[in-house]
Length: 165
Image 1: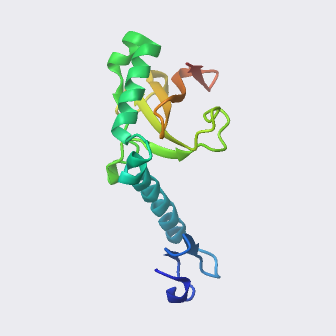
Image 2: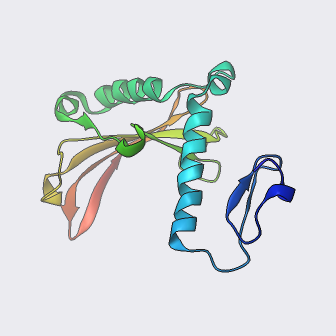
């Protein structure tokens, strides 16, 4: 909707003029909540990959993946050869998630706001979690620096084994 005046009573909709959702007075259905989540994911992707982000000095999803791939090779060497990119949301054509990292202390030490979450792993379908080996990397969406990286390798006493890089 262009303005709140045009918003239908009791219906979920997004008001462009104010950048807010018009929420129904009654409890929202699961479908309505999923519509909000879906919309926010699409907006984050569009902003990060749109000409505005590039003009502001931001990096694209593909650039973030290449930065993460190089960091992975530097961090884990030959173990990187068997790892493949895990697509974040194939139904939308996304290869990575774009997150607001403003409040994530482990990723925003230098004050970044948006980060590309890139994951590589060694299996297509995890049948036995002990076989999983993955490399996760958060790349600053504006300057392409590495915000954080870790590997995940199996379990000890039912707990995931993480190694930070």
